[in-house]
Amino acid sequence: MYVGFFAGWMGLWIVFGRASRAALIILLIAMAAVVLFVKFYEEPTLREMFAADYEEYCRNVPRWIPRMHAWNR
Image (cartoon, rainbow, N blue to C red; front, side, top):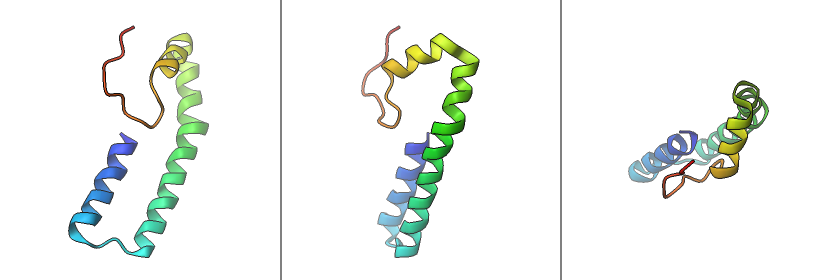
């Protein structure tokens, strides 16, 4: 979801040609904030809630790169 959101915004900037240096800096800051949020809040919360199931999910699904095929349990 996060990767798709940022890719969509970057695509809009490319299509409309409005990617300024300030916009790119804001994008980098937002991306850093999302990475920190996921690493230090979202993932620990999911580990606490789902324990072994979430650990198995993490072993089979990459964090930021979308899978090109289905994950079979």
